[in-house]
Length: 187
Image (cartoon, rainbow, N blue to C red; front, side, top):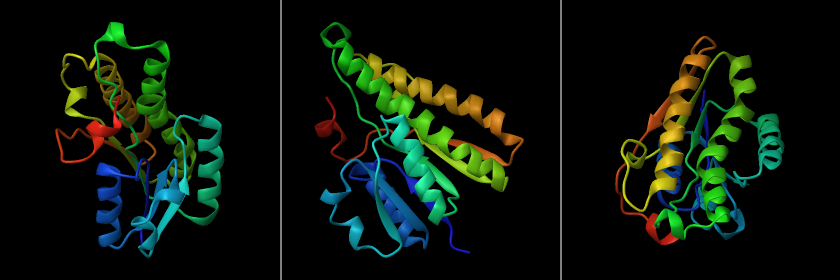
């Protein structure tokens, strides 16, 4: 039976590359992003479905996941959406900090929370949360980004213990530097 993965943040970089990889391996891919109408490459691939999703809006997440689960039985959720807020702490505004936390941390929490009932019912499922080497050690001018990635690591570890009894796995991938436009898109 063909498996299905939902990936957040597939408009570029690691998310887009992961969508292509899973597609090449024969999976159904639900590629989520804020502006799917701008995506030209993934929409041409069979068994790749583009879905509009802003991970900073918990109500939209719940509604979107509910709609997806009416058509698909999702096996894996890969929480990838995120960006880097870079700069000295005193130069960052409250709005910038809140946006970073809402995207990089609450996005992961809310997407995960929306899928837990589906996985519990199936007694199977996997969450893969993308963190960063910046979630393993601190770097100057990256304190808020570090905080969100450290938090995703802690969230994932605690959740893995919480959900193991239901046959649900939680994994963390912490990539280092890669050739993407991450730095250009980050603030």
